[in-house]
Image (cartoon, rainbow, N blue to C red; front, side, top):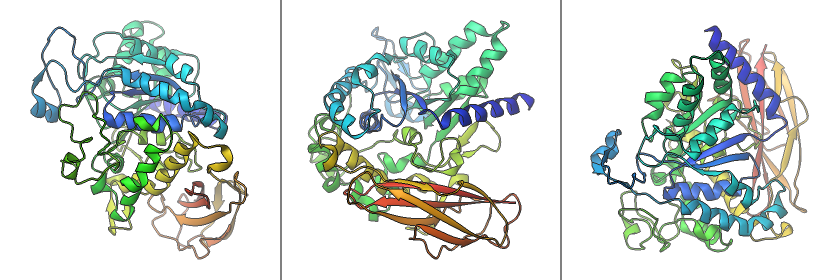
Length: 499
């Protein structure tokens, strides 16, 4: 227990020091599936918001290259074992796709820089791109350029948390950790190295797409933090028609997506959408690009340019600072969903029933809604940023700026009347900012709900509930939305701490 407490204190200290002064560090691992390609494109459009330190191609239960020797392989995962049986390779998209995307990004980079100064160059992104463990699902027996790269980052002297995004399998990350263990375990440095890595590494995983986390990482590195998204990502994945309320389907349909894809330059031309005539590389059965097959496939009925999937995007949505303070508090909820600390594994934060939010469309608690609730603002953000690829600054929209004229964590007493005052501005001339205050009660430790009477004013007056108990916290969110097209939103979260 003392060891765990020490690690948590060290992590919180590091997060507190760095969160206010630097962008979050991240390394992306990806298997190159079509939805990885689409997530990758969206990630590039947000690349000014975090520091991309590595782009690593890996394998998964769905995509592996084979060793080129005809070696046969059977999946360890029940679903792919039943679906595909014995294989020498599986749906492998190759490695050119990532360089093709970076080439296209390089063409729009000069225009992106007009809108935000911190976009990295394509040359820099190429310089941190590596091939990891790709021969088979879960292969982690050998060092690769990708695993060596992750190992070096975990061992470097930068103590800032390092977010390891897992869009495919965890095997290349597992190999990097195994190499560290092989080098240091049994030496006088091992204890310090173990603590250092566990204090830095944060794995954000979209499902388990191989068995290496379960079989190796969780057993040998139990203090490495993992954020595990198994339920919430579906609103951005192939099942989106089932997860997203029908009232918001239009944000993912061809009438919305088509102009984004077709009118915003060479990077967006590589974005996969339904019926686009662009067969995904490596697919055994293309049920996506053919305008006839999309009318009734395993995921539903679609029309041309409908959204297919970006199931991995929540992993980097979590890193974007939009004012929700979720980066160091994943249980707060934000654009990357809401995760709660496991009751049995302290280093694990996860979704599921304990992280469910109330879905106002179905009037039920919903395991996916902590992610689904942001669909409209995320899609408007996407539309705006794709326009940054081609439009001058004064023809595009940019997010408003908003802050609270008081500390955002505020001690209060039960029954106390308080005033919250917002100041805001917008970088685009002539635009106003509109407000919406709301109570994120699912996050509270206080059990009751609060009615906000003047929810559309810059100043909010509210009474702290009389039955609030010392130690309770209450989360009040201010959504600030501009009047541009598409409208963009930023936030302030106020955490009322009852004393």
